Length: 130
Length: 94
Image (cartoon, rainbow over all chains, first blue to last red; front, side, top):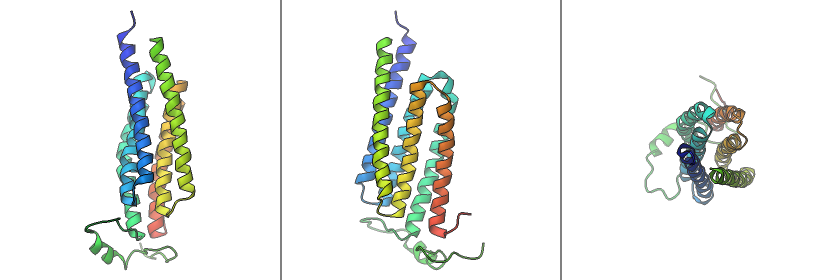
C-alpha cells in the first residue's frame, strides 16, 4: 500500500511545475508578440513572476526543508514586481515613448508639466540641485 | 510511488530544458533590442528565468543552497532594475 500523502505531494509538485513552465512560456511569447512597452510590461511584470512563483510552490510542497525560503521568495517577488513595473513604465514615458494606438492619454498634462524639469532625452545635462 | 517520482523527474528536466531555451531567446532579444527600455525589460525577464532555473536546480539536486542564491539574485535584480530606470531618466542614480 503506497503512502497517500506522498502521492498527493508528488501530484501537486508535478501540476505546479507544469503550470509554472506554461506561465513562463506565455510570458516570453507575450514579450515577443505585444506591440508596445506598456503592454509588454503586463507579461514581464505579472505572468513572468507567476511562472517563478508556481515553481517555488512546487519547491515548498516537495522539499520540506525549503518551505521557509520559498515563502520568503514568493513574498519578495510579489512585493517587488509592481515596483519594477512602475519604474520601467515611468522611465519609458519620460524617455518619450507613447502608448501604441492609445485612444486617450491621461498623462499629457503631466508630460507637458514635467518637460521643463526632467531631461527627457539622452545627452542632456542633469539638474544640479537636490 | 516510484512511477510518480520518475514522472516528477521527467517533468523537472523538461521544464529545465524549456527554461534554458527561453533564456537563450530572451538573451538574443537583450542583445538586439530596439530600444533601451526594451533591453531593460529583457534583463528583468532574464533575471526571472534565471530564478526559475535556480529553483529547478534546487528541486532536482535536493540542495537548499540554490534557494539562497535565488534570494540574492532576486534582490540584486530588483535593485538593478530600479537603479537603471532611475539612471535612464535622470542621468543619476541617487
